[in-house]
Amino acid sequence: MTTAATPHSLLSILQPKTDQPKDSLCDRSGTAFGGCGSSAGPADLPAEVWEKVKNHPCYSEEAHHHYARMHVAVAPACNIQCNYCNRKYDCSNESRPGVVSERLTPEQAAKKVLAVASEIPQMTVLGIAGPGDPLANPEKTFRTFELVRAQTPDIKLCLSTNGLMLPDYVEQIAALGVDHVTVTINTIDPVIGARIYPWVYFRGTKYTGVEASRLLIERQLMGLEMLRERGILAKVNSVMVPGINDHHLVDVNREVKKRGAFLHNIMPLISAPEHGTVFGLSGQRGPTAQELKKLQDSCQDGMKMMRHCRQCRADAVGMLGEDRSAEFTTEKVMAMEVNYSPDARKAYQQGVEEQRKVFAAERDAELAALAQSKSEISILVAIASKGKGRINEHFGHAHEFQVYEVNSAGANFVGHRRVDQYCQGGSGEEESLDTVVRAIQDCVAVLVGRIGACPRKGLMEAGIEAVDEFALEAIQPALLRYYVGYCERVASGQIAHRERGDAAIRQGALTV
Ligand code: CLF
Ligand code: SF4
Image 1 (cartoon, rainbow, N blue to C red):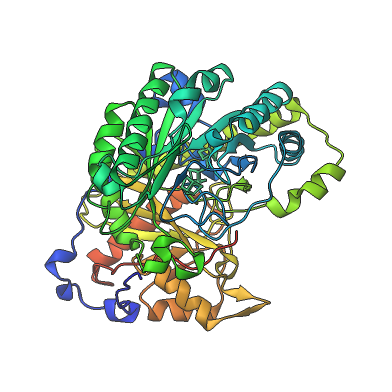
Image 2 (cartoon, rainbow, N blue to C red):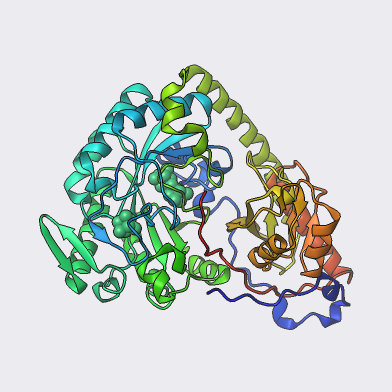
C-alpha cells in the first residue's frame, strides 16, 4: 500500500519565515515549460513531427487539454501473461485493472468511430489498445484500421502493443498509415522479466521463465528499431513495479531512447486484491506519487516523458480523464443517425488552434515577468479542470486533479490524481475529502472554479490553500501568477514555505 505523509496544517505554516527549515528550499530540477517533455511545442520539434503530435492528446501534453481520443475494443486475445493483468479485464498495459470494455466487430467499430467523430469534433485519434493485444488479433485490428482510414481520413491511427508480434506486422502497420505505435517495455533484463511475465506464447510454443522474457525483450527492441526505420513515432509504456523494476527503468529509458523512442510513459502499477492479479493477490504495492515523480524526473534528461497518461479503458471515448463511452454503446451507435462532416470538424479544430495561440501568448507574457524572479522555491499546485486548458471545474465535482510543479523556470505538468467526487448527491462527504487530501497532499494549493466553505476549511486544516480567484482562467498563466504571489508572501514573512509530504496514487477498483 502507499504511504502517506502527515499533512501540514496551513495554519502551522503561517509562521515567521525564521521557522523555515533550510532544506525546504526547493531543488530546481523542474525544467522550463515548453522546452522539454511532451509539452514540447512547434519550436522544439521538426515540422513533420510537430504535425504528427500537435493534436494527439497522448503525444502532446499541451494538446491533451484540447483534443480527445477514442478506443475501439476489437482485440480480445493476448499472447503473453503479465503479473499485473487479470484476463477477465482489459489489457493493463494501457487500461486500469478492473475495467471491462464492450467487444466490437471491425464493422461495429468503424460505425462507432464515425458516430463519435460526428459528435465530438475534437476527437482526432483512434487507438486500438485491447482489451487483449492488438497484434495477437491482427485481422480484426487491421480490418478496423482499413475501414476507418477509408471513411474518416482526418483521424490519426494509433496502436498499443506488448511488442511480441511487432516485427512481423510492422510493414502492414506502415502500409496502413498508422503514425503512432506504443510498445509496453517493462524491462530489458530477462531475469527481471521473469518476475513480471510468467509465460509468452509465440508461433505455437509456450515459453516460460527467463527464456520467455528474453524472447519478448528481443522482439520488443527489434520492433522499436523497425518502427524508427519507417518513420513511425514510437512511445514506450513501462509499468513501475516497486522492488522489481523501479530502479531498472532508468536502463530501459536509456535503451529505448537509443532505439529512437519519441516518448516514454512510466505508469504506476495499480494493484489491489480485488483485481485478482498475481501482484494484487501477493500484496505487491504500487508507487507513491513522489516515487513515480522522482523516477520520471531521473529519466527526462534528453528524453520526452509522458506524465499525463490516464491508463484509459480499451473502449474509452473523450478527453483524457473523462469517459464518454456510455454515450456510445453499440446499441446507441447502431441506432444513431450519423452526420460526419470533415469541414465542420476542421472549422472547430481551427477554433481550438486559435485558442491555443491566445493561451500560449498569455503564458509567454507571464514567463517573461517571471524571468525577473530569483526565487529558489518550487511548489506543487493542483488544478480542477474539466478541459479546454482552463480552471473551470467545481472542487466538489472533480474526478481528478491535475498537478503542476511551478518554479521560477515555469510550470510543468507532473501528473493527475484520481479522487472520489467530493459532492455526491448534492452534499459534501467527509470521507471523500480525505481521499482528495491524500491525493494532493504534496501540493501547497488547489486552484478551482468554485469551492464551498466546508471543503475550503478542511483543505486548509490539511495545509492546502483553496484558491478560486483564477476561476475560468487559462491554467498556465494562472499558475505562474499564483507562484509569483506565493513567493511574495514568503518573502514578506506572511507565510513560510515548507516541504510537503508524499501523496497517494489511488489503488482501488476504478470503473471509468
Ligand atoms: Fe490510445 Fe494509447 Fe494511442 Fe493514446 S491512450 S492507444 S497512445 S490514443 Fe494515452 Fe490512454 Fe495513456 Fe494510452 S492516456 S492509456 S497513453
Ligand atoms: Fe494482459 Fe495486456 Fe499483459 Fe496481455 S499484454 S497479459 S492483455 S496486460
